[in-house]
Image 1 (tube, helix red, strand yellow):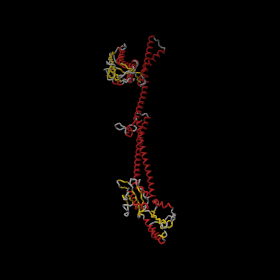
Image 2 (cartoon, one colour):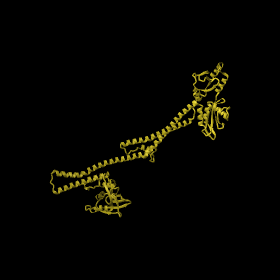
Image 3 (cartoon, helix red, strand yellow):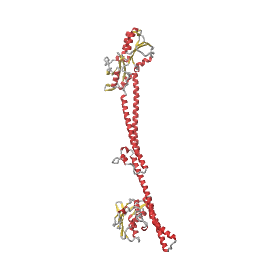
Length: 587
């Protein structure tokens, strides 16, 4: 179970990791999208100052050469801007979209003029000093300011008392209307004094409005040009519609976001594939187990897996397929449980069969002695006959013998049932077989009632020590030898031999009697195969050999029978020798 927990933990951890990566990638992509949106909005309001900051951030200095992303050069060109980068000596080390009239080297006065006025010749110029690389670099971003030049020309040609002369208004109005431009003149308080050309603004200008127009030109639909007339104190404002359409979003984070989106989709697909695979991997075994439980609930323990299921779970070489390997311990446990349940079911059936056999045997074997006792009882009860003392003594003896036979028979039935079902336990001790078996054989030799057969005992030269219970071991030998005595004709020689073979001790009981056919030999240890009857005594072939076989098995031994018709029978008992002398118990 520990291995299953570890594998499940690993599998779900990996799946959780991929989900976590997907969530993180998604969050980062969303964050970058928000950042890009905010940056674009800032660029839109503050272009070109925002563009200047971003260009400086993305510029790469390598070996004294500057590299600026080409997309920025395209953006600047589209919007009519040029770019120059100067080193500490005022030399231009990088330029893009630069007009011919611009210099390649600037002096101190030039740079101070640009820094102070924000203009150079006809260009509006924005500057920013960058020292992040350890060296000073001056970035100049400029565009041609036609509006300021035109305002100066109009001031020199059309102005009167700081305003456009009435005779020039019509001419200038025509020009501005055609180009969709607008000129407004405001006083020091921001009030609109004069308007020429189409204009939508009527309210006065607040002081910060002009600052906003200069600092956030991207927020207004027109390009603004300003001129301050010192003689009149008026401010001239020229508004020129922007060209190039809507503002183009800057692509600084485009590649990063694209990579993150692709990575997120890949991780999502991978996670989905993992989820489907895990569902299939975990679901298939669960369906298999459900079918398994259903069959086991119906008592089909031997059908742990159908042939179709077995092909799904196992390869031809017997190994478990990959999709079920996660549950290999569970499958092995199921097999073990099914095997034990099947064994228990078979054991229950065997007990039922044994019980039926036991009842059948009792009914069969008690019928004859009970009939005899019942017959004598009816005779004595009827009172129709006169009995002599000798006859009464004979009848009493017969009833007693039949009663003793029935008691012994019941004991044998109980013993057989207990040994068969391992319901009896007995202590074991070390027994030296040579002397033990010799004494058993000697009892038969000294029995005056046994005259038609003879006995020979051959002992082993070395001691044969086995773990055994003397009472039951003796009972086993009595049954085997008695069976040889009872079922052989007069003149039969019965030999009992002791042998050592490896780590095993052997007891061989053989005779040269009439032998057995194959059917008899095959069923010799089956109870009631021949049955018992009153004339053969209590240890008839029906139970005696079955009891002997059960006692041998209880002592962890084996029994083997060799016999042929007319050539006698040999019974070979094999027991493990005791490695050391210590008390033990067998159940």
